[in-house]
Image 1 (tube, rainbow, N blue to C red):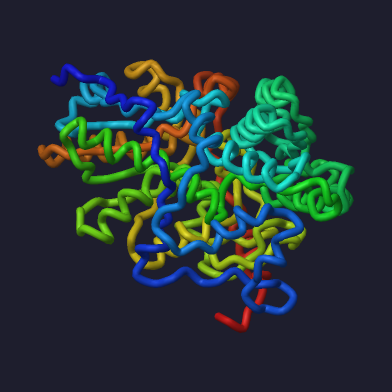
Image 2: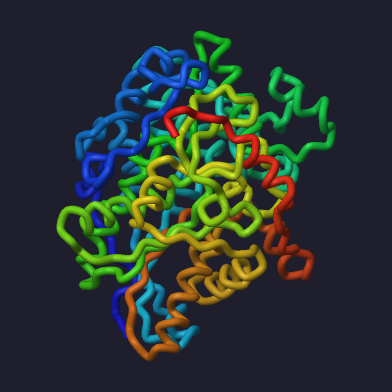
Length: 455
């Protein structure tokens, strides 16, 4: 039994620089390509929708990138986030494993997403931008950018995937409370949305479609930029405050993790917890397993192809080499809306190809089973996305029990589920279905991947 449940850092230990894993990878990641020319894109190709400082971060190779002081000042509202020892969960499982979790639900928006939302809003304001357009799945990212927009005086328009828009009215209300406008996607506001609705008026939407709508709005309006909540290199960069703090907190606890776990949809919270630990492994040989956990209904890392693909459905984005299910893939509707994305972060995908990380896919019922166990032992109701990490942590702890050997487990509890209680209601009433993707539709989507000469 341990006397310490929480490991806390003072505000002066908020990281002063983000960690860029590109500096330590044994091979550089493939370039992002212009879809028209097939050549690597340059800054001018992105300047219509991103401020130059974020474009520089997207291609940066230095190991550390300084966090601007105004961003660190806002981080003080919730950072450093606590590291918890899950003592009561360990007892419930009767495991010799030591389970730790980094809790990002303490942020104003209730998840890890403000780590990058605040940074992106700051850089856009400094560049003279007054409006931001974005997408959101479960609403965590939309809530976070709405919060950041309110801090820096920016107008924010959020295209929310329709299935989540209907499932989560209070996420919508939170965005509107922060001053943002929330539109169900696909919508009639954009050519991309109208094209989808013409084919399927009852479309549930997807992150790929919502991205298309937001990018279209940003590209057509010079006073508006686009902000993305996951996938891109600069987003993964900003999230590394999670792992940088966790390394220091694990040292306080006196343990080094045998395995680091994060749920994975676009890859941002996973990169945030995992990349700083991988950096120590690459630089200093500190051994650690790293595990990404994704939904079985949208299994990008475990079933997708590693190929160049568009980041959106309407093909308005550059081509990125990543694990993908194809930009036309439409995942079934399930409660972890933040993980319903056809592609995976190019940096996370590259790390997978290099053999630096593992991946597994799980169905939603076992995830909610673990989420309920966690809530009843630790008191925190995890977001549906985060239950994927909880499930994997529980499985690792049970494996340690079966082996009769101790194991130190660290996972990222990326957000709370206070706006997702309908999902728990469905689980408790036996209405939650383990939905699988349409194999034929997936194959058709993969068959339509763009042909790139560089491959």
